Amino acid sequence: MSENSYLGSFQFGGIASGLDTSSIIDQLMSVERKPLERLQADFDNLKLKQKAWKEVDSKLSDFWDYLTTFKLKSKLIPKTVQVSDDNVLTATANTSASNGNFKVKVNSLSSSTSFTPNNTLGKIPDLTTQYYKLDGRTTPVAGTFTIKALDSSGNILENVQINFSGTDTIGDIINQIDSNSTYFTATLDNGKLKIEEKAGQEGTVSSVLLGDSSDTSNFIDVFNLEGSDFVPGSGSTAGYIESTVHAGAVNTSAVLSNISSDVSSGIIRINGTEITVSSSDTLGTLIARINASNANVIAWYDENEDKLMLRNKEGGPQSISIEDGDSTGANKTNLLDDLSWVDNSGNYLGNVVPGTAANVSIDLDGDGTADLTKTTWGNTVEYNNVTLDLKSISTDWVNVQVTQDADATYDKISEFVDKYNEIIGYIYDKLNEEPVKAEKGQTLSDDDKMKGILKGDENLQDIFDNLRDMAYGVVSWTSDVDAKYRSLYDIGINSGDAGGSYENTMKGILQIDEDKLKQAIQNNAEDVWKLFAYEDDNNKGIAIQFKDYIWDTTKFGGTIDQISGTTGTIGSEMRDIAKRMTSLVDQLQRKEAYYWQKFSAMEQSISQMQSQGSWITSAFSK
View 1 (cartoon, rainbow, N blue to C red):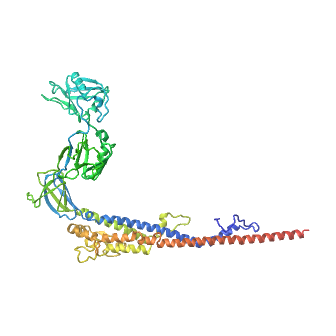
View 2: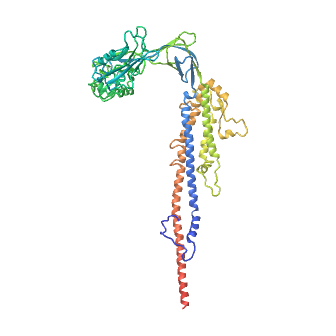
View 3: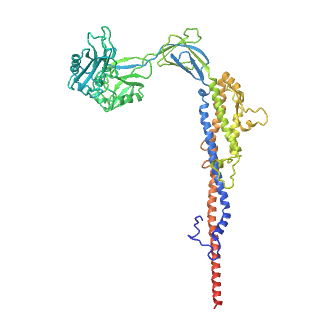
């Protein structure tokens, strides 16, 4: 028995009468609850309708999303461009490009203005520099280092182990190599260690092995010999292996305060763009911040040069300006001179190479003579709505052919027809779907309950009719629009019904006459696009009509929202039913209490009669 605030905690029935009072009242209430059950069924049915309309809304919204890109000219009637040599250039064309051929010769490519500092970031060591002070990229560890000379057969000519301490200078280490090796001598050139064949041994050594598992030093890393190859000698030319960069070179993890002893946190400006700098920044952090800024430059650290380079992103002889401090001259960093970029007077401390322009010749009639030339500061040239991306200089003419990509347009329109047929078919099925009736003892699934819920729905029928009318309709162009086609039928898209039952027409289905559509695309691609996607204040192509109508149908406060939204008609009905159900539940509880009251009174009367009978029986027995 459900909770009933009108009843006490306990009800005892049939004590005097022997009747199953609870069962009798349940049966009576079962009849009384029929109106409530009907209201509950109506409420559940409305909930299913809300769910069904939400599904319709989702399907239409998906079609709207598709139409937003379908209508784009570049998507619907694209051009294709073929070039005879894509090593020289590639090309793309917009929809306004004219079909035809022309030839291109790339005379020069564009380059960007670049800046190379004169000095390295790390201090270049000399012969007097002690080994333990070579802390450019690797913390030095002294000990032993092995050099093995091999002949052309791979035989070891000699195996020399050098033993040195951290306080030994580079000169001391070089002297050990000279005195201990028969085949090699060593030199230091601008901070780079060079190990080469001694005079008289030129061409003797075919290859070199540096280091051994027994070595205790990190000589190879400290002198940046990793990644370097032995260059064999011949005749009077000595073979050698050399450091890739000087032994004091830094790396991108170097902290700016270690590169520049007087650096302060502040601002530098590149091409007028302010870039913040902290003395605790690493070189890599500074590079990332420059490249992420609007300075329109690329900064990079050249590991072999040990220099921080710059170049403009755009081509041509555009200047690179480098300044310390903000626009007022405050917040200086004192960093730029140590990067070897500019001195305190703003003068470059390096080499600026101005960028150059690209130059192309264009032959319009194919006679091998340039009809015009074009120059640009980038390696992209625009001609007649065709974009040429230049790759390399050419001495021969490169043929460029622009054609209508009819296959791509046909595929796109076919996709549109499929999308439309999918949504119109879905709505038609919902309008004509039969409800599923549960067999005795069967519980329907949610999907089965949804079937037939919108059968014959007037609002859904209106949506179906409007979509079908747009698909089969005629566009009434104003006189100022030069458009060849006024309907999908004109380009070979129709119901496919030639008579009889007109089944496809009833369902709103579209079919494509492939030959007719392809011919329209090939001959009048622009007009095909207009039929679908042209739009101004007084004219709308068919895809635009669909898109606008679906928006009005699915937007907040639109047709579907007015039907199934929170404040829509279905929602209002559900709230009304909920109020009626609440009132009816209260009435049923009162009714149930009433029945219990009556049966309780009956039990009380029977109990009294039974007591009186017992008294009379007892009296006569005396």
